[in-house]
Length: 411
Image 1 (spheres, rainbow, N blue to C red):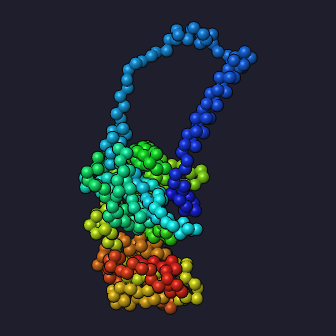
Image 2: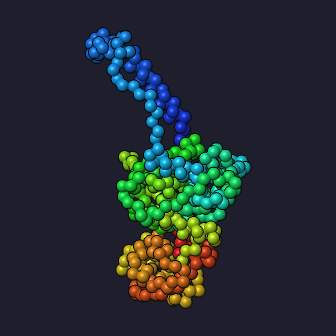
Image 3: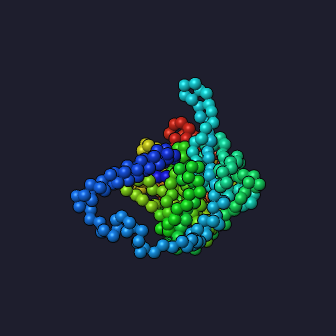
């Protein structure tokens, strides 16, 4: 999902942190020096009146109590962090970049995120947008060691990916909790690598702010909204680089995978995480097949709002998806045709391709669904048997309005 402002743009990943530190230190020193230089003048002019008992040798006779007792902190948050921190890693995306002038290419870092080791075999869950477009992926372990990671599989619809490192490098394994049992207001702890490896293993604390927010999932390359995803909202600080890291409960169990925040002037404390109960079946499919077995209609579509009016049939509504291509034998057998406009699936309104995916993915492969379509101004009901999305040709359908793709979607 990434980091969003109202224009849905990604924030800069790694600002110059040493510059920040220098500014902070300089400000502190200047402030302290200025204060010390001003004290004699202020005292002499009686601007500051200080009790005599607090000046000179009397300072040694203060009656303030002094304790040499060491306080041992082991509250719930500290205990939770200690349980899970060994399983939180950094994830570095390396990609091949070609110089425009020389046409020479080289592999360089494209961005950094976080990940969670969830089994002793070295499998790691992270966000798809953390590793998308990577030529190679490197994992930064909690002890500072680095390891090359294998990408087991990715899923752009859920924005999740599974990686693997050698089992011998695993120093800790996270435990998954139950995100369905969460309550608004209970503690939430975020752990990850905000701004990259310089701040690895950063812990922030907050609460669960809301349970069922909806956020768009975008294709990183095209910017197209693929669907809507239900997420947890938290006020625990989440920043660029936290993507793929853990959102934990007070028991140190992973209840969410940090993936997004609202990044806009005047907005604070609005971060989002994919609930772990939503992520688990995605993880299972990727581990088993290398991809997720989503149901599909076996057609290519385009949002009605993007279709030139001369191609639209007589349409009494201003929403829906325009059928560009009928691919599967099941869709062809149903009677669907190019030029049909789908406005509902099993009675649920379909406004665009994003809502079509969201509604469609509630079903299973092999289910038969009823589509409400308009054809030449006439309303029709058409039943289609769902197939596996992975069985379809992955290339975009030919452009109905000229050219390949043109924003077309295969659902």
